[in-house]
View 1 (cartoon, rainbow, N blue to C red):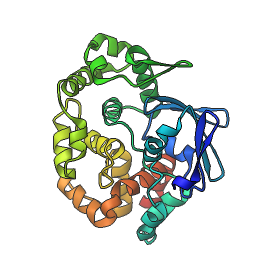
View 2: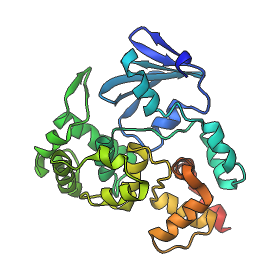
View 3: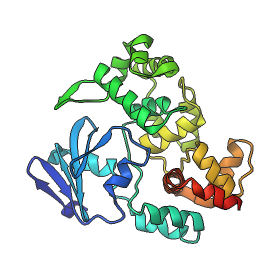
Length: 290
């Protein structure tokens, strides 16, 4: 891909992309720091205030330097061959619908600590409200990046905060979990080390953090650590599995057995297609019952 990356003014561009849609990536419930602006999206990612715009098969990033190219290629998962990943799923009727609905959807690779805190906030919440809370926390505890943008706070910055301050940001009962998790990370819980563990060991380690159940752990593993076998199962995904795949399991072991059998090593990517499609087409559950 390196020959398809060219400097462009104050930013860079990634050319000749296939199976990629900026809108589908940043509006699919996996990231909370991107907002529509002009013909593209403005967001904060990897410590940069970025304006992103897609024209055809080219992605333009303003606010990103040449030295940031590898990190943003990784962030948008541009080096992975999604065409090859989709081929084994072609026989699956429901996955075909999800892939056809969002053919350019990719799984983002976000900073682990940001992903951890964002998905603690996501518990019993909706995307719009999560975005508002994350933005308020960044404004309260994050470093300014210019233009009204703020970086995601460091573990130390959040650990030094109070529950009252986080409650004022809209975090509600999650405030105590955010503070405790930030303090554990600031005091030595090594998220980078967790990302290098075998998948099941990483899941068990993440659940030891305050406010992290199995679903949040799977989100952190997938969106923040690159474990593509991770399969976050929220209410939408469980509806999909029950209505479309006949799942009647009772525990995590049953769920993982189905996931491993049906979706394999890229289960997290399959999950993202299913989740995004189901969230935008709730009528499919009624049709499945008819």
